[in-house]
Each structure stands twice: as structure tokens, then as C-alpha cells.
Length: 199
Image 1 (tube, helix red, strand yellow):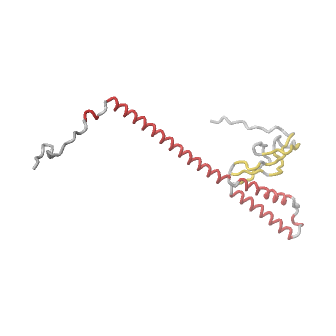
Image 2 (cartoon, one colour):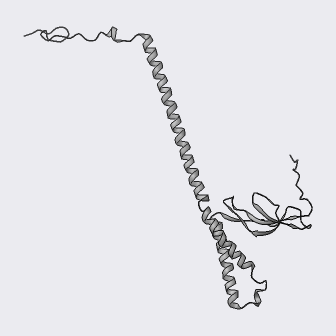
Image 3 (tube, helix red, strand yellow):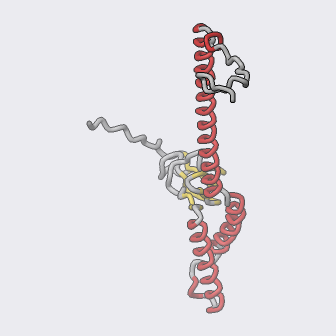
């Protein structure tokens, strides 16, 4: 029977020499280079991670803004089409005689129906963020008004809207359609309020 050696391996089994541990360790200079390389890779990957996170956050914010904008202004084209219906109802009502009592009861019922329809249409527009722009008596503002003519009227300050041919509308605070108006001229200059110096 073969005797065991001190290492626990039988004598008849050849022992292969293991790797030389002293020669397997790289020199200190190479280790430092490897550590620096790994730190640089880590910094580069961290930078890429931060950029990817920022891009994702920006994309999410833009998508949210697009959804919000679509929610607010998505009906803009439809609303512009409906405004022509509102204009026609308004023209029909303004063409009616001032004295409605002299009219036939059936005609009065038709008028009442048209008035109710116009009120309901304005209410539906307002529910969807479309509001009528109040122009009469206000100073002319090229952002909201389109001047169709000037009217000689010395009783009001120059540049005041004195007649509204077609009303203007806003959608969620943004101009949907400018009001077509007549503007006064010949009156006194509009006074500009001075800023107060109260502290």
C-alpha cells in the first residue's frame, strides 16, 4: 500500500506544480492604471446614466405638455366651425324687430326657441373653454381686435371700440378668433393711468 505524503496526496499520483503566485501578481504600476481605467469607465457610465435619466424625464414632461395642450386646444378647429353657427344665430336675433309683442304668437315662440338655442350654444362653448371676448367700450387692442373701419365720434376717447361686427373668442385664454370692430376717432386722447408710487 502506498504511503501518504505530508500534503495528503498519495505517492504514486504525480503532483502538478501550481501557478507561481509571486509571478501572477501584476506590478503596482499596472494595478494603478487598471484602477484609473475602471474609475474612468465608472464615471463615463454614471454620466451616461444621468443623461439617460434626464432625457427620459424631459420626454415624460414633453408628453405631459402635449397631452395638456391637446386637452385644452384639441377642439380648436371644431370650435372655429361652431363659431359660424353662433354668428348666424346672433345675426338672426339682431334682425328681429324691437317690438316683439306685435308679432304673431307662433313667431314669438320661434324667436324664443332661437334665443334659447343661442344661450345653450354659448353655454356649451364656455364648458369647453371657449369664451366670448368683450370688446365694446374697451380700448382697441391689435392682439384681440381687427379694425374694420374708423367712426368719427368725439364723445368717446380715440381708439375705443364703438361697434362690434363679429365677436371675438378665446379658447382657454388664447385667441381663437379676433373680434372685427369699428374704432372711434376724433375724440379726446385716451388717458393712460400713471403708476402709483405707494410703498
